[in-house]
Image (cartoon, rainbow, N blue to C red; front, side, top):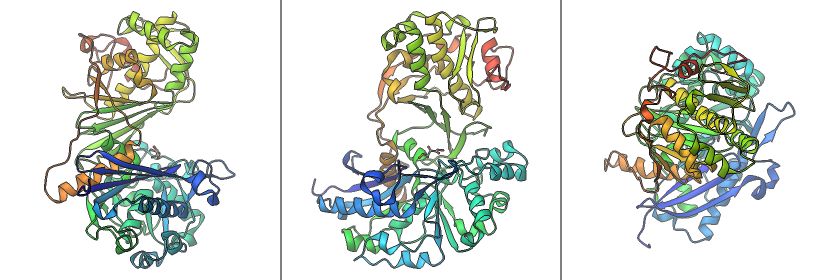
Length: 540
Ligand code: XUL
C-alpha cells in the first residue's frame, strides 16, 4: 500500500464536487465529496444553483467551485492522504457552463501563494461572478440567430454535432456579449467548467478538450477546430478568448507549484485534460467501440460509441473522449421510469411482478401492436400524448393490459434504436449494451432491450461514473504519453444479464438494422417510426 501510486479524478457537477482516487490496478481507494448547499451555505444555492427571477436564467457562483476545491483538498490532507503518490489527475465538469476570467487573471493564476487558500487568491479574477450553467434556457433568440447564420439547424448540426440549444456555450456567450458588452471586453479567457477546473490545477489557462468543446455549438467536430462562422456569429474576437482545443486525453503539463507546496503533490504530477461529465461517464462505464450505455432512470439516457456520425436534429454528437478520431452520441428521453411506473400502476396494479409477467407472456414484436407514451413533452422527439397502433398500423385508443405493457417497453426501446441509428450508430457483432439505473434490475425489461437491439445486455454499477471516468482518463492519458499502451481497457464489473432470444434479429415487427428510411422490407411500424413526420397524431 505504502508504495502504491494513485490517479485522481475530480467531478465538478451541479450539486457537488467529488473526488475519487484509484490505484495502478484501477481500483477505487478513496472517495469524498463536498455538497454545495450543505457545505458552502454562504453562497445561498439550492441544488448548487441560483434560479433567477425570469425562471429561465440559471447560474452558479464560480467562487463556490473554487472554495469547494480548497475544502476537499484540505480534508484529504487532514485524513492523511499522500498526495506525493499521485502520478496524474484529471476531472470532469457539468457540460456547457462558462467561466469568465477577467483581464489579468492569468498572471494571478501563474503566481499562487501557497500560504493562502485558492478562493481568496482568485477572488478578483472573474468578470462574471455567477456562471451560466447547463440548466439555463434563456437564449432562444441567440439559438435562432446562430441557426439562421449558418444556413439552418441541420447545417449547424452538421458542423457542430448539434442544432442550437439554449444551454450550449456559444449561445450563452452571445447573450453575455449582447447584454453586457463591457463585461465581455474585460474578459481575457472564457473556460468551460471542465477547463476552468483544469486551470486551477495547472496554474494557467487550460485548453478546452474536443469532447466538452462539442457541447458549445462552436466547434467543427470533424475538423476539430473552432468554426469561424459560429464564432463570428456569437461574439467578436471570440477565438482569442477560447484558446486552443486539444484531444481529451492530452497531458497538459504538471501541477502548479502551489499544490506541491501546500498539499505535498509531486512536482511531476501530470494533469490530463478535463472533460464534460457525459464524456467522462462514457470512459467511466468503460464503453468500447460499438457499445451502447443505457441509463434507465427518471429519464432515460443513451451514450453511444460511434465511428461515422450523421448529426441529426435530435440528439448530440460529441467527439469521443477515449479515441479522438471516433465520436460519441448522447440522447435523452424524458419519459423514462415515470412513464413505466404510470403504466405499471394502470395495467399491473402497481406491481413490478405483474408487469414482468405481462412481458414474459407476450411475444417479442407484440404481434404487431406498438405504442409511444409521452406523459410529459418529450425531448426526443418533441412529442406529447399516447399513440397506439395495431398490427394494421391503425391508430387505436386502447390495448389489453398485457399488450399495453409490452407496447410501452418495446416502443421505448425501438425509439432508442431508431434515434441511435439516425445518428450513425451501427449495431455490430461485438456490440454490448451496458444498462444502468433503477429499471436495469428488471430482467424482463432487459430481455426486451436485448431483443430489440439483438445484442447482449450487461449491467454495470455506475455510481459516480463521471468521476471514475476522470480518474481513468488520468491513467489513460499518462499511459498514452508514455507510449505504454494504446489505452487501458478495464472490463471487470460488467455482468452479463441477458442475451437476445433466438430469432430476435428476424422479428418482422422490429426495425431492420440500419433502416433510416421506410423501405419495402420494413414492417409497417418501423416504416412509420422512421418517417419522422411530426404531427399531433404521430410522434415519428
Ligand atoms: C448534457 C447536459 C447535462 C449536464 C449535466 O448535455 O446538459 O447532462 O452535463 O451535468
